[in-house]
Image 1 (cartoon, rainbow, N blue to C red):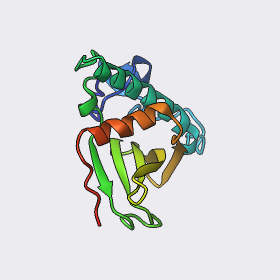
Image 2 (image 1 turned 90 degrees about the vertical axis):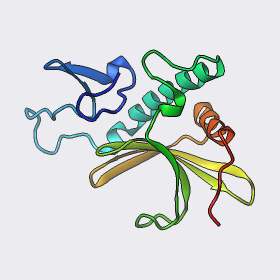
Image 3 (image 1 turned 60 degrees about the vertical axis):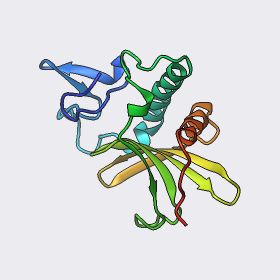
Length: 166
């Protein structure tokens, strides 16, 4: 199911709402103006729920991929889930000293991504983080020990050899 506004995949049905005949993801719903100023949720308030939901989707897609079924009826194909998988060089952003592999799931505000930190010398992924980012705000959850996150890393590395920058 795709959001009519941002055209991103909404995930499960409970993450989308029908508004005036359009499907909108939770991130694109207009804010409730009846709330008092300052009561909007921060990225830290929602990151764990967003992470859990994305990992559930990814687990479903990984299982579909393992079973030989190419396309999930709601989520599509694992190889098409998200926007890109790329390497972010160290110092690309302020206070970002480590490079990492990024599976960018959505972009624009809010955006979501999974970051894989890889040690070239040890040939291993030593940290995995899920990030939920919005304008001037961001929060992460360490998912290094999550089986689905590890399986996703294995899937990406199995797609072809990762060419790490020197």
